[in-house]
Length: 249
Ligand SMILES: Nc1ncnc2c1ncn2[C@@H]1O[C@H](COP(=O)(O)OP(=O)(O)O)[C@@H](O)[C@H]1O
Ligand SMILES: [Mg+2]
Image (cartoon, rainbow, N blue to C red; front, side, top):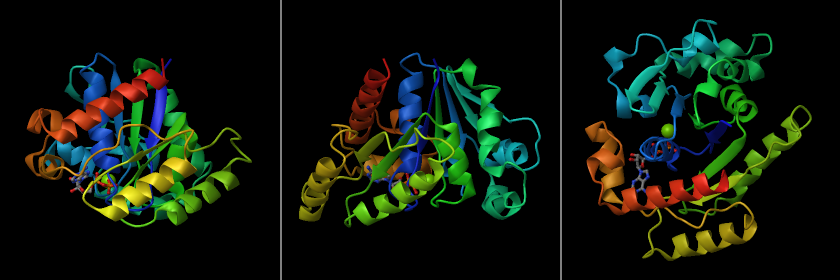
């Protein structure tokens, strides 16, 4: 059975894109068939795998213009629905469309059975594009960077989900993990402790350490597993991926 996971946090820079890319590659190299979906107009996920001139059509064309879903093959068992700058206007463009919250669900329904996992990289907002991901997903995973107390931000996500549960009662945050963890920073430890308490039933054991290779690899246009396999970042994402696969056995 295919599992669709949305990586969501309206805060930018918490590791949504890094996590989607790293977990996607790790899953594919363990023989899972994976589709990555980039929903962010910044197209950072797309940029990790392909150059802008390789993107003729993006998720925008499918979501807003009702064209065929563009799928690019990245490597064995790994495919990508790219994004581009047009997606920055998607919130506005979609506001008048019929059934606007369900469009991604319908689009993915046609292809998702070809995969074991569909991983969706959300934009840093809680607007209609992210809501499309919430409806399309079986799981909502929230990466948290432990810089400042994130629980207020989590409440905002919870409130949106609460509203949407009228239409989809099972909607909930089903996974939380800490990213960019630096054990030298007391605030990081305090925040991790708090999040582990608050989200005890869904938090993953693995936290992703702050790691220079992870910050460098987008600039090299590749995932951490091609940039530096021995890095802490690669090790941590491998462990997190194992945990995710274990949960879905
Ligand atoms: N664990 C980490 N350690 C160091 N840098 C990281 C880590 N995770 C992400 N980064 C870097 O932080 C920036 C933001 O990460 P990104 O995944 O793009 O966040 P988001 O998609 O939530 O905006 C990127 O430059 C990325 O390379
Ligand atoms: Mg991103």
